[in-house]
Image (cartoon, rainbow, N blue to C red; front, side, top):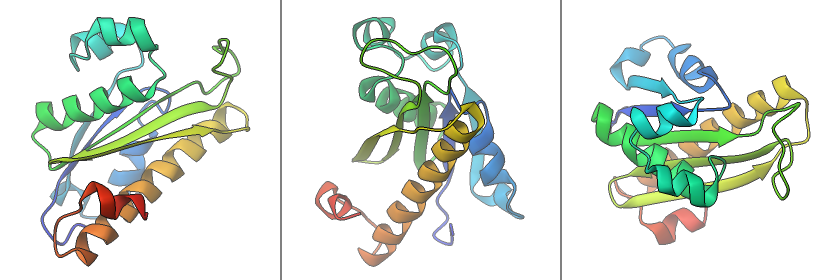
Length: 162
């Protein structure tokens, strides 16, 4: 999957390391997976990942803006080619007005490319977490396939077709 020598790092909140676990379940993953940061608490998001606290306060920890910031920051901190993040409300509690249980944002960034997607899963806690990981892996695979098809680089316009 990473024949081009690309590396990936993950910042996870609601998945609590499941995305990193899925990536490292593949033999040889040390060739492409640099590591992850589980930023379950907002203090870790702002303290370790350095997501601006103002961004979290203005948009909520479960938002497109925070997901993108998390992905950029983990990419920068770990020095990877690709940064990914997942932030959401797995349930059963945690819902807020406008953000029901299952609300999830997944972001992927690489160089000048960035993509963030919103999901509203309808499962229980385990199902919402598993769905988040599945969608993140699908997003990563789509990005890599588009990158290969584009000869090594993906523009925002090419990614819209994913």
